[in-house]
Length: 178
Image 1: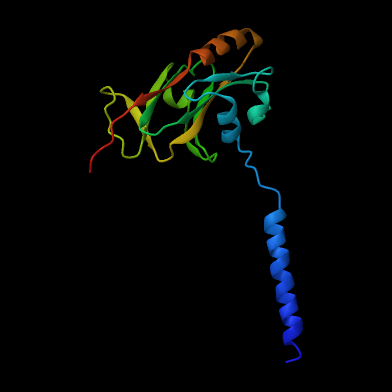
Image 2 (image 1 turned 45 degrees about the horizontal axis):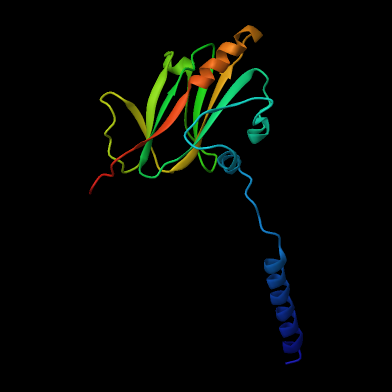
């Protein structure tokens, strides 16, 4: 009996301190790369990341690479991607909104000068043109980053033109009926 009063005081103190912590703790803010990109840039369009624009978005450090980024937000749409990544060495990577790599492809794997493919949501009907390469994804939000290596300063302008010509366009799709 003599331990009940101190035990109740201890439990009451613990409950009050936990409630105070929950109520007064500052709100957590997610500062993921996707959230920063989606706040700053419009969707379904590649933007070239440079020293004077967007270099702080993903904090790229390599001076030997040039970057373009597109974030997507698909609901009943597909995303048609087109990019020329074959001047030297290029990488195209598709990320989920949580930063997970969905897939990545580089110019040495494809041995193609021009990539053209689509991202389809799970359950979306494939009414893409015949022969169109596509990849099914589960998450409707994410981003695509193209990285091109700059082997020489003389190629910098040419690589900038390649990045500027990349596209990621949303196309309305039909849902499959099961």
